[in-house]
Image (cartoon, rainbow over all chains, first blue to last red):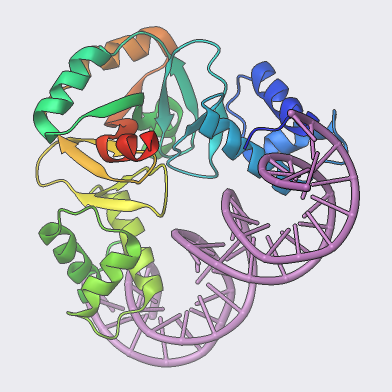
Amino acid sequence: MNNYSKQREAILDVMKQNREHPTAEEIYTLVLEKEPQISKSTVYRNINILVELGEIKKLNMAVGPDRYDYLYQEHSHAICEKCGSIFDFYDVFNKDKLSNELLKQIENNMDINSITIYGICENCKSKNKK
Amino acid sequence: MNNYSKQREAILDVMKQNREHPTAEEIYTLVLEKEPQISKSTVYRNINILVELGEIKKLNMAVGPDRYDYLYQEHSHAICEKCGSIFDFYDVFNKDKLSNELLKQIENNMDINSITIYGICENCKSKNKK
DNA sequence: ATCCCTGCAAAGAGTTTGCAAGTAA
DNA sequence: TTACTTGCAAACTCTTTGCAGGGAT
C-alpha cells in the first residue's frame, strides 16, 4: 500500500481544504470536480488508506455515516448524539495525565488518538422541550 | 412510546446482567434464552427505545457494529480503534469544567452524556510492530 | 516484472420499516 | 377502543470486495 495515484492526492486535497468533517459521500462529490471519472469505491478505499496512514482521522459518529477530518491543528470534537452536529474545540484534556490514569485503571497501556465528547446540543435540547 | 412488554423487560434484564458491552446481535442471542420467540427487529426496536429513555447507552464504536451498556455506575470508555476492545474507567473528567470550556469555545451549550477516549490498545500496538 | 491502483458491478454487514395481528391501558 | 407492540419479510444505508485492466516503481 503506497503507490502514487492522482485520485488519492485529489482526495487528500479535498480534505485539506474542507473543515466541515465531510462524509465519504460528500468527499466523493467534491473530488468529482477534480477527477470526474473517479468511482465511489476508489474514494472509500483511499479514505481508508489515508486513515491508516494517519493523514486524516475518522470521527466515530453517534448517528449517520462516518465523517472524516484533516487535522490541520490538534483538536477535539463534541458531537451531538441527536443530530450529529460536530463542534471543534481546543486544548482541554491533559493527555499525559489521562494516559497515566488509564495505565493505572485498565492495567494496560493505550496510545490515545482522540477524545470525544458526546451529548445533546442546544438546538436539539430546545426542540425536545416543545 | 411506553407500554409494557415482556420483550422489552427481558432485554433490559439482559443489559443489567451483562457488562461486556454487547452488540444488538449478542443481546438478541441472550434474550432468546428467556423469550425464545422474540424477533431481531423487536430487539433492535427496543434497544433504540431504551437508549431514548436513557436506560442504556450506545457506544460509538470505531469498528464493527454498535455496542450497548447499562450504566450500573457512571463511567467512561477507552476504545481501541483497531480491534474494538472497550476498557471501562472511572472518575477522570471534570464535567463541569468541560461544560464551561465548551460553552466558551463553541459559543453554545451542550449536555454532556459521555466522554470517550479512542486509541490503539497494547495488544494491537505489539501486533503492528511485527 | 511486479505490485499497487483503478472503475465497475455485485455483495456484504448492520439496521430500519411496512404490514397485519396481538396486547396494554 | 385507542395507542403501543410484536414477528415477519423486505427494504435500506453505508461500506467492502472480486475482477480484469491500467499505472507506478
